[in-house]
Amino acid sequence: MKSTAGMNIREWMDSRVVPAEKMRYMTGGRDFIDDAEIAEKLERNRSNDPGRIKGILDKSLSIETLSPDDTAVLLNVTDDGLLEEMRETAAKVKRKVYDNRIVTFAPLYMGNYCVNNCSYCGFGTRNARMERKILSPAEIRGEVGTLAGAIGHKRLIVVYGEHPLTGAEYIHDSVKEIYSVKVPARKGYGQIRRCNVNAAPMPVDELKLLKEAGIGTYQVFQETYHHDTYSRVHPRGTIKADYAWRLYAAHRAMEAGLDDVGLGALFGLYDWKFEVMGLLYHSRELENTFGVGPHTISFPRIEEADASPITRKVPYAVSDDDFMRLVTVLRLSVPHTGMILTARENAGIRRKIIPLGCTQTDASTRIGVGGYGAKEEGQDMSDQQFTLGDTRSLDEVVRELADMGYITSFCTAGYRCGRTGGCIMELLKSGQEGRFCKLNAVLTFREWLDDFASEGTRAAGEKIIRKELDEIASRMPETVPILTEYYKRVENGERDIYF
Ligand code: SAM
Ligand code: SF4
Image 1 (cartoon, rainbow, N blue to C red):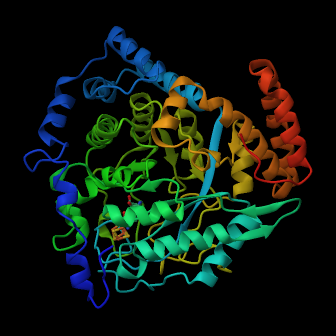
Image 2: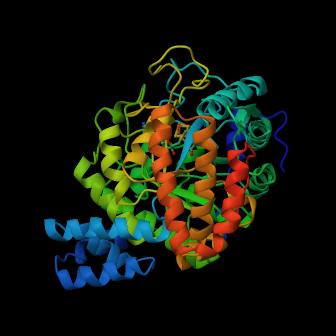
Image 3: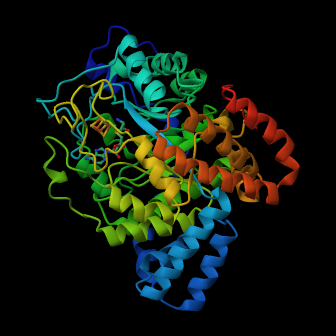
């Protein structure tokens, strides 16, 4: 890795982009997002013909990534009956690949220092009011103590600004620190078993360092795929202004051996249909280049942020109805990819969006730096990136999900036994991964109910567990003897047993 010792911040910023590491993927200096082509496909593919739509939905049901033309058709559907059929099919696709499982996680903000100045983000350099902080190793242990020891989370998305103080080495060390914390719980112990990371684009050698730390998914959101809009919201002279450096961040991660990558777009900056097309092109590009698409897709809508006027007058605000349409089309277009809904959205919207095919959601969320140890309830805009729509506890969310028929899975087995990237996608497409996941969901939910659930949540959870055990007995009876043995061991306080 290049030494950064002795550099000032401007020199550090100027040294971040490694031109060869983006140019080698480009053709004649152009990237794979052709704005005119996307606009043309959206214009040309307008159809409310039931036969055409049915043909496309059949492809989604056979777990096939859709073409840009098919996706454009779905994005343009306006007929209420067809929209309802699309929502029903999206729910079926989710069930086929992921059954009734939902994975939960919490974000952990490690710092709010950032050299960029994105117009929608409270961490931008223009925000002189922001109190800048970075968590020390002791503070990290304190936050993880609450997350893993009191709430019972097993997965985090660890979030970093772009700054020399929180560069690759800090990310590496902080992730190792998180994994080292083990806290006694009612019957067993609490521990974070998967750290996904949301951080700036990095060169390949730094991404190898992240791999060495054992991170799960590496997330970089393109924010907007529309080139002109991208330039407008990311001021020239900042690192983030380089569209292609960001666009190929997932390519470099794959090169570095991090084959679980997370894509996303920040909805509200430009036309939502264009952004869905961008996410589809990006997914297909990864599939074509590396034989594996993204592990997850995120679709945050812009929330109000300090010192960010654009967040109070969102240029392409997405209505709740359009939000439902975009989530439905994403589910249908990239059927095997995980989809993440966050606590930016309020509880009512979350109830409507989850059944359309989401696979992951956060709970007990705090986004202030050191927020989990904070004494006061409520949101403190002096150090957080934007405003949350839902601050309910994990216990409440798990109970609501159970009442809706979902089992919360705390499983983190996949990446720890090599089921990542192309391997997990093949297993998901063929339905085989579902077998491991179903068993692991039961075991980890049992752990969580015994260690952390309130009485009411435990009662709701027991019903779901019984239903799952019955289903396993009828659908995969050959697994019952070994599952029964593992289940008893978990009931007796043994932890982290998985298939
Ligand atoms: N500095 C890293 C980067 O830019 O990639 C980490 C990003 S940030 C902490 C995580 C994501 O939050 C961003 O990629 C963006 O999509 C989203 N975000 C930023 N401002 C937001 C806002 N006002 N409302 C909702 N989401 C926002
Ligand atoms: Fe920095 Fe990321 Fe916020 Fe942009 S979105 S200002 S890069 S933290």
